[in-house]
Image 1 (tube, helix red, strand yellow):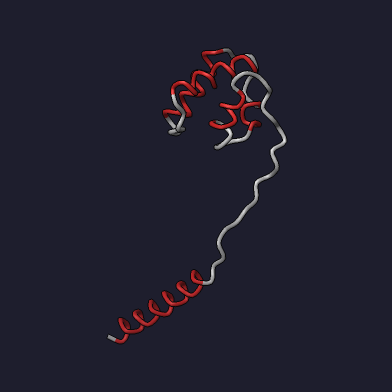
Image 2 (cartoon, rainbow, N blue to C red):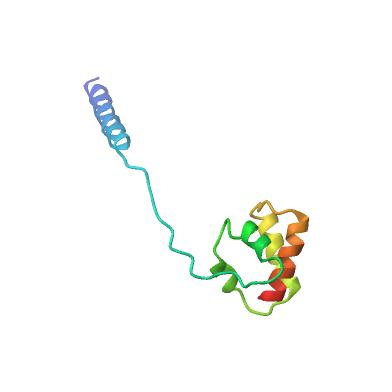
Length: 104
């Protein structure tokens, strides 16, 4: 019986210490680096700005293999919509695909 009371006391002390540590924890904060890469200008760049750059930077687009064509960009845009649930309308998706295939 003594051992069960000792275990209970140790568990209570450990729980109290954990609670105290968590209650004094500071919220995690971070700052994002300044965006250095800008979208290439062209028809549809504003639609890409409004849809794509809300999740990632223009660097992500710039680092994709160049001159891959419309099929490549259709696949990338559809992946963002279907797999990552990007809230992009069908009409915006077409504009984005056209822009990316022409500019990149």
